[in-house]
Length: 471
Image 1: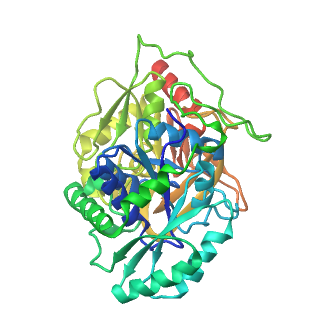
Image 2: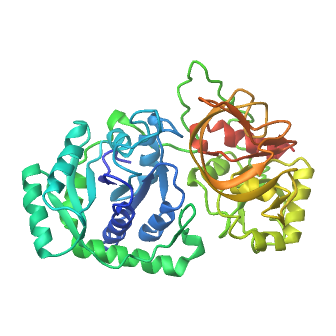
């Protein structure tokens, strides 16, 4: 595909400015004009891409320069944008907010530079008039490599308010590409970890996305926004699209041991192991590339819903349980005793099981006092404390996912605690100012709070599939 796919990055001075509404609405508005829209989200967020998918009819994909490394941002973007007319990338937090203590790394500005994409700044104008010019000027001039191509003013009170804002921004030299009035908030309910995922409120989410699209269509100059996107030029660095069939490795860091590829170079088509992947309302957090990598490595990936299915898919040789909200559905998960027993029996057999965050909780003995699968001799419970942030981790020992010494970067985001926090064989050693061990490795089980992006080290998927094939 052409590396010059038209693209925009939707950013803001801070969280709460309206990025998600504008980005999702813009995706829906472009799609309504007959464009094939590629949706992307900066950072590790799993929830916003679900709304993006509703708006565009395509899988929402993440672009995370911390989890995957800067060198994979362009290729992953091009992979997702194949066959599309335009791409819209929703930013994270404020434009220049990146991984803590890492400068610009993983910020919206960093990703915009890696993509060579113009930035549209969404500004909450509800409590200002002329000051908006100083704010926009500061963001537009802070980093000369970041091109702020226009502004969308959000929560504008009246025609007079709009007039004052436009007059001020003329002095800043940044065009106004849209004005959104103060309106009742689009129905996108939140809870302890952000928006409620699409899978839990599909009909209402469809209505919400349609409302966002109508709001953006009415208030924004779609022609000017599309023209700005088409002026982006080629993605820097001569990137080619990432492919799960032969994904590129990171350059080896001096202190990093990468997982060696295992198994044949080509998948064994005579024997495709069935890998069951948990889904449904309780397990909504996953990156599309994980399934693509497992499939490319020769697996037959079969989804199932732990809230409804009483048994694992026929012939299951391995199990992947990603993130989500098991704490919200603890009663229903606990009530499905046949499936809990089937998961426990699979783990007891030594079959490979990979569990992240919500999956970790599901494998515990109990969650908030309710019986879970009992694979791990640990209890989980909700707390008031939010654990959030990027992590630099190293595999303590060999497991179904990684060889000892493999370094991967991960992300934690939860309000639960597991006691004890690690087993006799921990999954990861977390590096940094407060080193610790975390997670569980026992027999074929790898369970941890860390969310990882397997595109950063594709040997993970190949290793897991090979273990499923031979276990």
